[in-house]
Length: 318
Image (cartoon, rainbow, N blue to C red; front, side, top):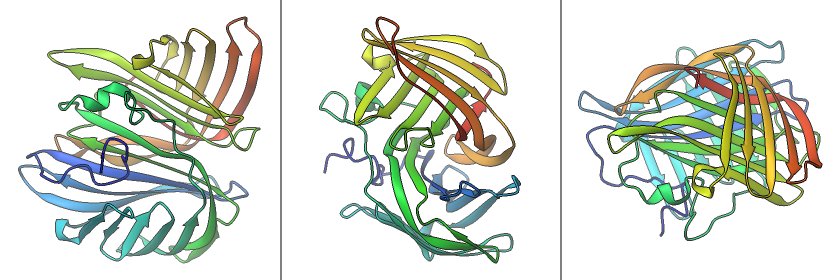
């Protein structure tokens, strides 16, 4: 199996001393009142190794709560074909999430069926969202977008509350490597006016052979087409505004421009990797605000929309 073409599978069969790998499953109910993200993963470092499941839940009353449950490394199981991972009694695949979590802070049970996933376009030069950078063996952090948009069926019981996700929407991505970037921005939403449209955007300070550069990827799926603006495609990025709570970006390719504005709302802390260990704290938003406007090279507006169901992280202003 070409693992670059399949970022969903476990990427590291032989571990460095410092290494992490985590999958991100986002679930939004049909009425948009509940948003839940589950992050199963593994952490290897000199001091200790363990597996984990993180959960962040935005309740209909706009109350956001996060949980972090650690397990022994032996509780982690992976399978390439068909893809699936399991931590303790909970499992995750591209067709189903089956939860059985019982801890002092979190009880989560139930099954969610995942509809037809919406992967990104791939090629030999760009086997995944990292483009040709996926062939560089020493990247600090690697990223994979597995499904930009898919339907959900089923329900979960979270701390005694039953939440129906039938008719809702999901999103799947993952990260692996040594550490999250020192500075980065991440934005994701598939809740725009056009129900099939989906956005992923990441801008980060990337260490590279003794220096660093600002790397970026912005991928928009719309009307059955894909518009990608990235460092490796020759697109240009202008950072018009960057604070700890707001961003305004302009991406330009030879044929299109995309203007993006994002604003964070209520957030909650999650654990993030630093040299393999989950020792860094970041803040994630599940109900951020984002607006986009796509134009062609003549300036004609192709699509303009906004979303209040946006996942967002701003770690140090760019």
